[in-house]
Image (cartoon, rainbow, N blue to C red):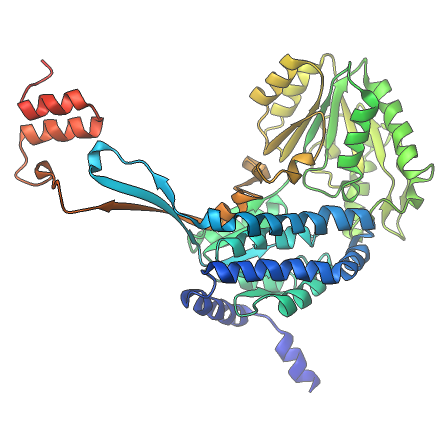
Length: 491
């Protein structure tokens, strides 16, 4: 019996192939395409969250020691909002979009029809393991796809709960969860998908893209990068500092893709900024930062060791001006501020993804743009704190990032009217709100014509008169068409 159970648990390429075959049969049968099926699944997902919030919060606590407020608001409530928005707007999103036609195809009408890609794969991340698993699934359901979700094995309690809840609440003939690690993910990536949505890091993203390329499968990549924060003088320093803290340590203790990665400010203003950080961090988390119940732990020992490697580099460790304490047993690192960190250090050349915040010094705040643009990569987010209108305009015009926020951090994530996604090394494609629906929909062009007004000039034998008339039609000039019909040349 034990050997049979063990054999049953193996998920290999053959298992993945059968899984995709089953889902494709459901999709081809049209099960996922109806509005009613989509609506039922989204309502079931809402019910799933409402009936199981304590278990979800507990799983997130097991995986990350995530505070209840962060779990309830940043994961569960945000996902509920995504479901509610899709339920409210989905019927409108599904409607064909009218498109204009030209003289070239007159008389005609046209529309753009959103159709589901088919069977899609969602590979999720560990830092927000509930939200980042199911938020893409909301878009995939709304668009009418069959779905396989592969949650991160680095957050095992949440992954196990997701598998159980999805199986219990959603249509298991069309939506499935596959647990596991590298072997299971590799088996899934060997299959032909109609779209792959991956959230994670650039190294794995390259593996995903390479696998997708074999089948010409489109991908949407949500990655990360070194998201900068420019801090100008002449601002409300307390509010600015609090908002940076909320985006850095208040978002999973820095383990977030849009977390501020480093700060750039002037040499003249830096000490005021550091003092404000010290004051507000103590106000929020107490004098002993490691004992705070409002800070998540580092996810595992590997990431703990990675962060210490960044922090303990000789030319970096001497730059610590606040924090730096660590608790290996409980995988905790205190919120740490480093002043005037060398730009050739490890911490300035890797995404930190943790509670360390380096501060880079410049002579004048305008020099910050050169620091960001000289890095050679484009971040997922960039932030600016200023009251200077010209500085805001230059920031928007010169900094290329997935998203920009002026005078706050991370809050753009909550606006469903804005696309959320990266550019270059920070990802490709976007989702949230209608952008999620669009991400999992093929936009099909449809042109309608009758049998009247058949254009003789399309057909052989070709003549110079037909050539002139077709050129005029394609050019869209009424005068040109009249000239061509009358046989006049431009001369």
